[in-house]
Amino acid sequence: MTTWVIFFAIGFGVASFVSMYNIAVLLDGRYCSREPYCLADFGAGHPDKCVGALNLSVWPWLGLLIAFCVVTLLLREPLCMAFHEAWYMPATRGAQDTRRARAPPSSMPPPEVMFR
Image (cartoon, rainbow, N blue to C red):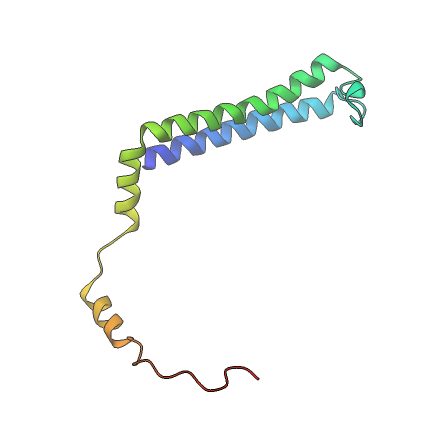
Protein backbone atom coordinates (compact mmCIF):
# COMPACT_ATOMS: atom_id res chain seq x y z
CA MET A 1 0.00 0.00 0.00
CA THR A 2 2.79 2.39 0.87
CA THR A 3 4.55 1.67 -2.42
CA TRP A 4 1.33 2.40 -4.32
CA VAL A 5 0.92 5.72 -2.50
CA ILE A 6 4.58 6.69 -3.03
CA PHE A 7 4.50 5.89 -6.76
CA PHE A 8 1.27 7.83 -7.22
CA ALA A 9 2.75 10.80 -5.33
CA ILE A 10 5.86 10.70 -7.53
CA GLY A 11 3.70 10.51 -10.67
CA PHE A 12 1.57 13.38 -9.40
CA GLY A 13 4.68 15.48 -8.81
CA VAL A 14 6.14 14.68 -12.24
CA ALA A 15 2.83 15.42 -14.00
CA SER A 16 2.51 18.71 -12.11
CA PHE A 17 6.07 19.73 -12.93
CA VAL A 18 5.85 18.88 -16.64
CA SER A 19 2.46 20.52 -16.99
CA MET A 20 3.49 23.72 -15.21
CA TYR A 21 6.76 23.87 -17.16
CA ASN A 22 4.91 23.68 -20.48
CA ILE A 23 2.35 26.25 -19.39
CA ALA A 24 5.20 28.57 -18.35
CA VAL A 25 6.88 28.09 -21.76
CA LEU A 26 3.55 28.79 -23.43
CA LEU A 27 3.00 32.00 -21.48
CA ASP A 28 6.60 33.24 -21.67
CA GLY A 29 6.82 32.66 -25.42
CA ARG A 30 3.42 34.26 -26.02
CA TYR A 31 2.56 31.42 -28.36
CA CYS A 32 -1.16 31.96 -27.89
CA SER A 33 -1.05 35.71 -28.35
CA ARG A 34 -4.76 36.47 -28.46
CA GLU A 35 -7.57 35.17 -26.32
CA PRO A 36 -9.54 32.53 -28.23
CA TYR A 37 -12.94 34.16 -28.35
CA CYS A 38 -13.77 32.14 -31.42
CA LEU A 39 -12.30 28.97 -32.84
CA ALA A 40 -10.88 30.76 -35.89
CA ASP A 41 -8.69 32.97 -33.65
CA PHE A 42 -7.37 30.08 -31.56
CA GLY A 43 -3.58 30.06 -31.63
CA ALA A 44 -3.41 33.07 -33.92
CA GLY A 45 0.18 33.93 -32.96
CA HIS A 46 1.95 30.57 -33.41
CA PRO A 47 -0.74 27.93 -33.92
CA ASP A 48 1.55 24.89 -33.95
CA LYS A 49 3.51 25.97 -30.89
CA CYS A 50 0.34 27.03 -29.06
CA VAL A 51 -1.47 23.73 -29.57
CA GLY A 52 1.73 21.75 -28.99
CA ALA A 53 2.40 23.43 -25.65
CA LEU A 54 -1.21 22.95 -24.59
CA ASN A 55 -1.02 19.28 -25.52
CA LEU A 56 2.20 18.86 -23.58
CA SER A 57 0.55 20.35 -20.51
CA VAL A 58 -2.43 17.95 -20.67
CA TRP A 59 -0.81 14.65 -21.73
CA PRO A 60 1.07 14.05 -18.44
CA TRP A 61 -2.22 14.17 -16.54
CA LEU A 62 -3.92 11.79 -18.95
CA GLY A 63 -1.00 9.40 -18.66
CA LEU A 64 -1.01 9.61 -14.87
CA LEU A 65 -4.75 8.99 -14.60
CA ILE A 66 -4.68 6.05 -17.01
CA ALA A 67 -1.69 4.51 -15.22
CA PHE A 68 -3.37 5.08 -11.84
CA CYS A 69 -6.56 3.34 -13.00
CA VAL A 70 -4.77 0.37 -14.55
CA VAL A 71 -2.41 -0.20 -11.62
CA THR A 72 -5.22 0.20 -9.10
CA LEU A 73 -7.37 -2.33 -10.97
CA LEU A 74 -4.47 -4.79 -11.13
CA LEU A 75 -3.71 -4.38 -7.42
CA ARG A 76 -7.31 -4.13 -6.25
CA GLU A 77 -7.34 -7.24 -4.03
CA PRO A 78 -4.08 -6.54 -2.15
CA LEU A 79 -4.92 -2.85 -1.83
CA CYS A 80 -8.36 -3.58 -0.40
CA MET A 81 -6.86 -5.91 2.18
CA ALA A 82 -4.09 -3.46 3.08
CA PHE A 83 -6.52 -0.55 3.45
CA HIS A 84 -8.91 -2.72 5.48
CA GLU A 85 -6.16 -3.84 7.86
CA ALA A 86 -4.84 -0.30 8.21
CA TRP A 87 -8.23 1.29 8.83
CA TYR A 88 -10.25 -1.18 10.89
CA MET A 89 -8.94 -2.34 14.24
CA PRO A 90 -10.62 -4.64 16.73
CA ALA A 91 -12.35 -2.94 19.61
CA THR A 92 -10.64 -3.11 22.96
CA ARG A 93 -12.35 -4.31 26.12
CA GLY A 94 -12.46 -0.79 27.56
CA ALA A 95 -14.23 0.56 24.49
CA GLN A 96 -16.94 -2.09 24.77
CA ASP A 97 -17.56 -1.22 28.43
CA THR A 98 -17.72 2.48 27.55
CA ARG A 99 -20.32 1.78 24.88
CA ARG A 100 -22.48 -0.10 27.37
CA ALA A 101 -22.17 2.74 29.88
CA ARG A 102 -23.29 5.26 27.25
CA ALA A 103 -26.29 3.22 26.13
CA PRO A 104 -29.33 5.44 25.60
CA PRO A 105 -32.02 5.27 28.26
CA SER A 106 -35.24 3.46 27.52
CA SER A 107 -37.36 5.25 24.98
CA MET A 108 -39.71 7.87 26.30
CA PRO A 109 -43.00 8.89 24.73
CA PRO A 110 -42.82 11.92 22.45
CA PRO A 111 -44.00 15.26 23.86
CA GLU A 112 -47.49 16.43 23.00
CA VAL A 113 -46.25 19.59 21.26
CA MET A 114 -42.90 19.26 19.48
CA PHE A 115 -42.70 22.75 17.95
CA ARG A 116 -44.53 25.99 18.64
